[in-house]
Image 1 (tube, helix red, strand yellow):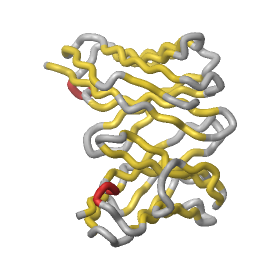
Image 2 (cartoon, one colour):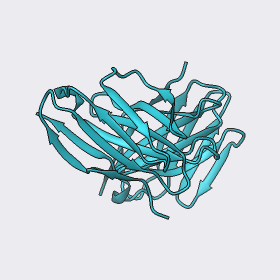
Image 3 (cartoon, chains in turn green, cyan):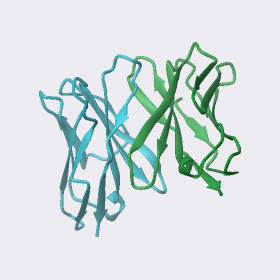
Image 4 (cartoon, one colour):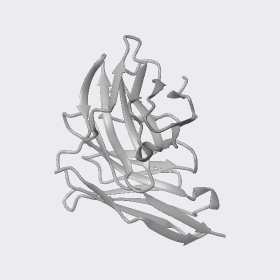
Length: 111
Length: 113
């Protein structure tokens, strides 16, 4: 089946690293994504990783993929108050051109 | 390149009415998908259109329908509105080339009273 799971809340202090975790079920996923949603706005694509990669780094963002455990994580270094938002993990299902989203993790950054 | 554009941004409707939301995809993108976002249910897939044909459909009642035009612009319609239809409706477009990387619009906030 197709399912993406994330924890609902994460609270960190400004300057610390945030790690948001996600598990997915479809082993044929080709791309895995992280989106950010700020209040009142749509979802902004942050980064994505192809399923044959283990890691991708983009400035303060590091994505780790453990394909064996179907586990994806997003690490935000030096977390700032502007990073407070909901972060969605998503997987793209091969062949169906369908993207399945997790419920989103609400990140609170305390000053 | 302009992003995904959705209109209207905000609207209020009465139970029993119908509503039409519009979405213009990123230029060159032929796939448009629609999602409903509510606090309780999260992000739920409604349907996806590609080259004017519905390719995927989520688990929503027949009151929810959509269409896509030859210029890839899409509309979704909800008939006989219920209070539970109050939500943020998000449109996303894709070129269907890089997996299914989709780019979202800012959404249409629908309130049913």
